Length: 468
Image (cartoon, rainbow, N blue to C red; front, side):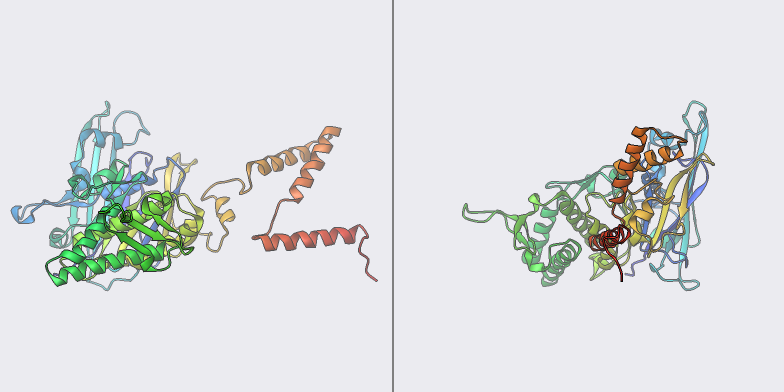
């Protein structure tokens, strides 16, 4: 059976929470192709998470069994199933009293990430919702919509969306919990419980050894190898697959403790539970996502981890070392080549990597008195992290520490004075000395060389070094 890839290429919204005015978020690069990654940056509270929730809500909602519905059936977006109280809270409070919101999601079928589609090879659909509240902020309008060129394409299979909220917790012995089967309800509520990674790996290992059919044993063994390879290549300090061990449960007192054991490149063996939160969280997301893809596609595909999905990750840079922040996007795309990742972040390091993909900045526009989305703003290609931080995208006045920012401000105030007191003069002299020590190089070696040149210049000026 042919697997149909579904992706989202545009989200339009108006009147929802902080987005009081009409705006849109594009998931395409400048050449019009759908990007493997869209990174959303912005300050706290501007509405980055709201955008991810809207994407999930716009997923076309299909009945459990399509054969039981008639030809008159029309799909609606997932948000249509939410409680009235949830919908009422979404409507922007920019104008007190009655209000209306609109959300539209544009999905495309049979497109390939990063490649231009040939004419006539793709199908499109638009899901939407219009929600209104009266002067008492009570729901009085709900109008879902679904428009498609070829409805059957979107009715034959679901638009697969997985959501990972910022509050990601690692579960224990929860593989049989039906509440975790669909990630979206938890994601909407901003709480994501991941499947227990150790339980998943033990289950896969057992199936690779004890399944009745040889084909099933080989299938599970390959999945286990694939997951181990992804983890080893994604996280620093793990260099060889055989250094990632899955030990069976302890039977005898003399047996080693069961569970996941990782060996770093320094030769240290560490149980999964003793790893740092950053390691455990990323490993758990990798294992959780791999398990979900396998369960969805293993009956149709020999490479289920290569199959399509839309994956939403809120605050992907949480607990990530700067090196990881620069590497995680290309590495995830390498191992999950047909997944459309859409994530939020705060880090300028993530933005540097996103330049080769797609990115947007969410910010409050003072002149418009509204939140706006800047799709692929120009002018940051090749910039250093400190330059990005002090650009209008992040809005920091300085990339220096607070102490040096104060010195610079005090110096400016003193220089604007018509007459300095003796205390002012001494303070200004002290400021100048401290600011001269501020490093201006991009690395320790360059700083040392600049200091040497400065010292040499001062000696020449003072006559300590003379030229014949």
